[in-house]
Length: 253
Image (cartoon, rainbow, N blue to C red):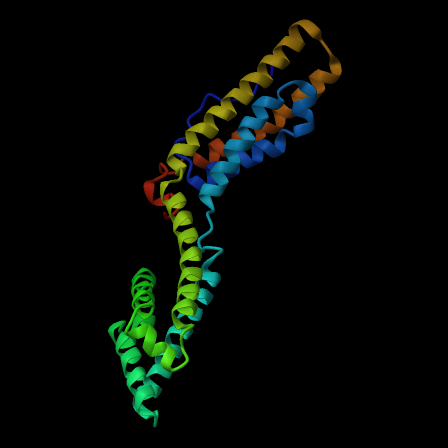
């Protein structure tokens, strides 16, 4: 009596081989057949496990939001440097003594912020937040009004906040990747799902051969068994001389 071979070790398979094995098994067991023959739930469990494993094996190396992070960072750099340059221009060249003094006052605040646009992301966020706080209070607020730059704290804050919102979203993605599942934890789930699928198909086939004797069902199940066993035989041959999968094979965090 035919049956799917499932009682064999899959430990020596490399991650790529293991992912491909699960994918090939799913292709050999069409969803329509699983539904018609009564083992759709077992196939669905394997499909979910295989998808999770594939996602882990081929994670997004880059972050989708990286271009947005870079563009919002350039925006806040530009805003910071723009107002800094205007303050310095008033401080250095304005012919009006009051405005020149006001420019010098504002320029001092920007000078205290240092080379904010050259800092790392988090440090720049903190420095600009501090600058915004200072510019919103006297003597800086009054000096900004004197040279027509009262909007500076608001514009700088908006640019800084826009960047930080995107950056926090990226940080959440980094957290999820760091704390996510690994191939080491996912492979046993896939193995168990495959074993349960094989057992279900074997049981249905045996029951039909011994009791129901439905020729159409027998033909459908035999095809699945033969197709899966062809994959199993090839897989076992492939991994028979392979070294055990190592930790280094797991995707970088």
